[in-house]
Amino acid sequence: MDTKSLIKFLWGAIMSIVLASTTAFAQVSTVRGTVVDENGEALPGVSILVKDTQVGTMTQLDGNFVLVMCKK
Image (cartoon, rainbow, N blue to C red; front, side, top):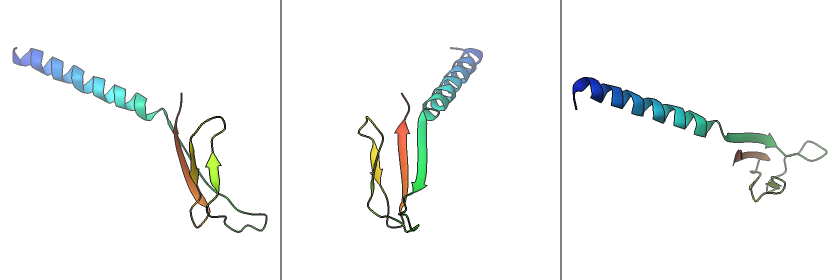
């Protein structure tokens, strides 16, 4: 394989990896929030579930949560 062919091959491989990783990252959704009661007090240990899935998380001591899920 000559140098010119090798450069073309490597350039194509790099571009394929970049495009594939961009597509993969675009399919992740992150939701952040805080669960509080009617007085505005943080609620730790609350379960949060995405309807009709098994995806979920729990709030931290300060009521904050982060939910990461892949889009279909």
